[in-house]
Amino acid sequence: MNKGDTVNSIAPQSLTRPRLSQLDLHMVGATWCNYLFVQLTTDEGVTGLGEATMQYQSKAVAAAAEHLFERYLKGQDPFEIERAIAVMYREEYARGGPVLNSAIAGLEMAMWDICGKITGQPVHRLLGGAVRDSVPAYANAWFGGAETEEDWASAAVSAVARGYEALKFDPFWPDGRDPSPRRLRVGLRIIQAVSDAVGPDIRLLIDGHGRFSPGTAAELAYGMSELGVHWFEEPVDPENFGALGNVPRAPGLRIAAGERCWSRYKVPALIAQGRPDVLQPDPIQVGGILESRKIAAIAESHYLPVSFHNPFGPVATAAVVQLDAGITNMYLQEAFCEFADPLWFDVLKNAPRPVNGSFPVSDQPGLGGIELNMDAVAEHPYRDGAYISIWGGSRDFND
Image (tube, rainbow, N blue to C red; front, side, top):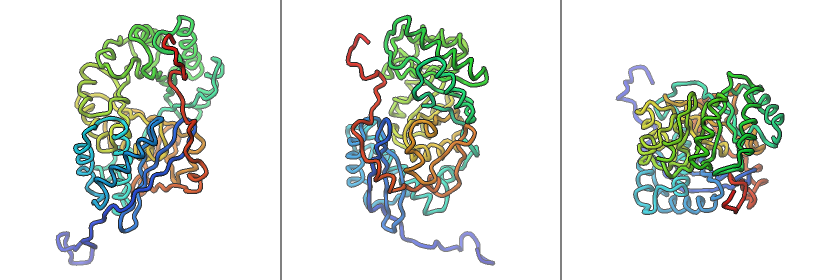
């Protein structure tokens, strides 16, 4: 501002509004899924990145993203994000599912990245500013290759040595519905071994992946309570909120749920009927950053903490860290990046990296100054075998 100028006298540098002109999709064959990165470009050459990864459905999501861009976004102003989401959601009759929502999310994240680059601001500042400088995380996928109790204990100690104060794992995989008493004891002994190895100050988060019957979930809830487990995640299938609500609230044990509740319109029913203690919306599968903020606000009105589900790639994590920065009821953020896939830091420049168990909040423009490493992307094309079944691949319904 020059001497004598007032705020009202400052003319804008340009009256030209940017327009979205190009969509490029990049699939990367990772260890257990195919990352789907979304890149938008404006008519002025500004690019933005988003992520639309969905387990085992990357090609379907890619087709949806191409359709949405051509029909609704091409030629539109990247700053009109709320309008874009409303139009894409409203105009698509078969709406509200994870394929369409994931496509919307990837496009929306890329629009936010563009807005940040044009304004020179990080996305968290465009959303109202940060309430924290770093985002506390919990480790997932730290247990790769563990079979014996000793293996699990050793891997847990290594994860804690990186600074994590909470560990998530599924010691019952791939058992489901009603495992034998012996298999239940094996899983509980693994929990005990991990607890003994890391001590009482490390929170243990057990993921059921929605596999157990209500009866087994109840039995496990009491068993986990006795072992001091912090939360039991998705103890039963996600569709029936009442069944979740009937899982016993054993002393000291929290119930975490919501990663497969794909619409903010269903969140009030999940809270009322399912009675979760921790809400876990997935920012990709609910439709992006703005939808995640709206769900977090619903949770906050019920005094519930939010821990965003995020087992996917580095672009999604860059977006969720920007999101977490301004969420007052944010609790713990899932972190796969140090354990799940060696590609993580290869395919993305300035990928978010935990420091002592927390993600620093980047102040670089957009989603943190991120850029795809196109050489690494080219070296890891789509993989048909990028698949891990939470049921162990079994087709026997007696399992």
